[in-house]
Image (cartoon, rainbow, N blue to C red; front, side):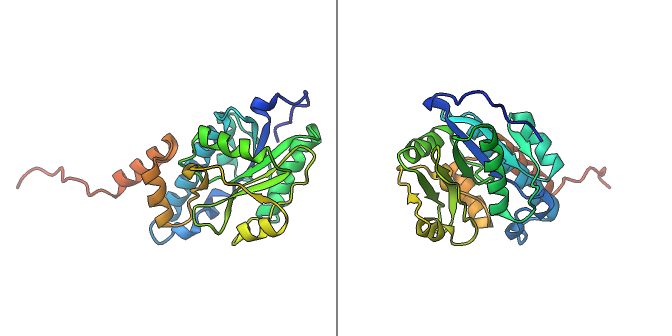
Length: 234
């Protein structure tokens, strides 16, 4: 586990610590199974996470990113981008992993502003994320609904506010029922577009995914293309 620094909080321009959960790659993106085999799904899941973390770290409002994962390959790749990686020691599902990441952050900085961010946002843009976090700063607890309007892609807790994730399934309704304010920061399609299904992946491609996802998709297309025959003419 990477140790969290304990220096004073940064100024408001870089005040948020983001917690990004990532399940083992062999288990990721099972809903893409009708279109992709296990190796392809793992490759894409890692690429999604790399583009998500890279964009988050490039956001002016983000101080640091903590990735919670037990996948050593993914952990190494995301640490290379500058993320802090911690093992999923609760091993009790998504919300437990997020709470563990939040405790890791606040053990070093008790009044850290926290935001949980999905790991599958390949079209994430730093400026869009900055807009969302600026809106979140006006509320103790807030969230952003996903593109489908059913789930959640970001959950924020201001300094001193409790961090109570309720991700999974219809989490938009659960976060609202728990008292979090739904954010309406304008057009932020890259922050809302998570990828679970082939239709989601097509929509992310239309938005324009980051370089890791673009490279992974190109490699998958190349692998699927019929190879020209190299045999000499008979």
